[in-house]
Structure formats: C-alpha cells, structure tokens
Amino acid sequence: MNFQKVALDAGLYFVGVPIGTARDITLRALDVLASADVLAAEDTRSLRRLMDIHGVPVSRRPLVALHDHSKGSVIARLLSDVQAGKSVAYASEAGMPLIADPGFELSSAAPEAGVMQTCAPGPSAILTALVLGGLPTDAFYFAGFLPNAKSARRSALEAVREVPGTLVFYESPKRLAAMLSDASDILGTERLAAVCRELTKKFEDIQRGTLETLSRTYAGTTVKGELVVLIDRGRSASVSQDTVQQALEQALRQMTMRDAVDMVAKAYNLPRRQVYQQALALTKEG
Image (cartoon, rainbow, N blue to C red):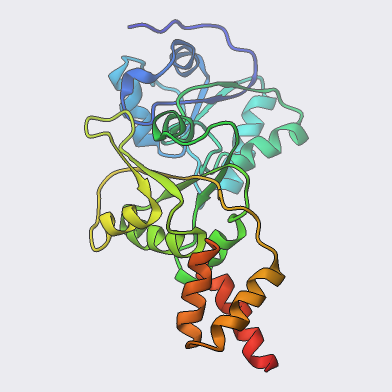
C-alpha cells in the first residue's frame, strides 16, 4: 500500500485518475482518496475498482454518484458536507475531472457556497494524445464530442475550421468513420490528423495520415475503445473571395456546377461546401 492517511482541511478535492493503466495514479491522489470524509464520482463502480486495485479502503465512508441525472441534489449535499467541516473528494470516471465530465457544475457552485476547492492533478487523454499524435502542440483547441446528427456535426466542424491550432476531439467508436469523412470534406482532404485509441492501455494504437487517408482506412469499420482524434490546423494561404469568385465564373462557363466546384475547391484547397455555396449564389444572381 503506497498511500498515507492525511488530515484534510474541509473542502472540495478534485482528483485526477488514470485514463487506462491503473498505476498512472499519483501518490497524492491516493492520499486524498484514502483520507477524504466523503467520496463522490461520476461512476462509483469505476472509483471503487480503482481503490481496490491500490488497496485503498472505502470503509464506511459515503460514496456518492454525481451524474447528469443526479447533479442538482447531489451537488447541494456535497457542498453542505463541506460547509459542515468535511472533506469531499470527487473523481471522474477517467482522466481529469470537469473534462467531458459532469463535475463542472460542482466546481462552479463551490465559490458561491464559499467553500475551498483544490485539485490533485493526474492523467489527461487530451495531453497524452498531443504528446503521441505527432502534430503541433504550440496551440490547441479542445472541441469535446461532436454532435451525433450529420448536419450538426458538419456545422460544428465548419465553426472550428479556421482555429489556428491543433484540433482535439473525443469521439465514439461507432461514429469515427462518419466523423473522419465529414472532417475530410469540411476541413480539407490533405489536413494531417491522428486517431489515438486506447491510450496507456494494452492495445494502444496511433494511426496518422491525412484526413482523406484516415477516412478511407476507417470507412465501413467499427473500432473498439476510447478515442481521441487530432486534426492539424489549416495550412493553406488565405484566398480572397474575389479570387474564388473569378475562378468560379470562368469555370461555370466551361463545365457543370459540380465539376466547377470540385475544380476550384481543389485548386485553392478550400472546403467543397464553402465553394458550392458561393457557386450557388453566383448562379442565382445570373
């Protein structure tokens, strides 16, 4: 047993837990989990298993589930416990609390309730993927999970197209192929990307390539495990709208709209959807 029971001040303690390999937990995280008066977790079964692995007893301490269906009443209870002089430890199902995790409302409510909060940091799937993905890390943007519906997903991708940093997404294995296909169409086929699967686990796998290549790789397949998808920032030089319009006007005189849009989008490395909308506006004006 590598933990120590320590005296914790009354307060809220956010605890980072492993994203895969159980031994990635920090000694301080174990100390907090062993010492807190009240334990709370997004998934109590996951936290109990982790504590069992490290020999940290739950004993008779309350172990409370905080999830989307219980947030209001549980948050009030946990803050009341802190105000009564108790220490409360909260852990996500995996990784850092508040990142794609229901702990945000608890953290937001703490200052208003006048309670102390701190964090015992730990692993992060986002940072681990950035280290292994081979894309620039000087600037990045975490976009979380994209919407399920195709039209909403494409709109969300369009919204981050010009972000000047590496894009980071969480994704479901069932939606990976569709997401990569839409990203290739909206962000550009030649953008570099990396699919990071099962990070820190036995079957860890990193696939790198252009969005077009990765889209073909995963087309018609369903993978297993937790996924982080990285997409490089756009590298094309800026092109004025007038330049694109002139190219479209000339192309539309010689070929169908579909062929004209395909040619101009490829020539200027622009999303086909953007060029199509401009071509549509031109034909309506004509």
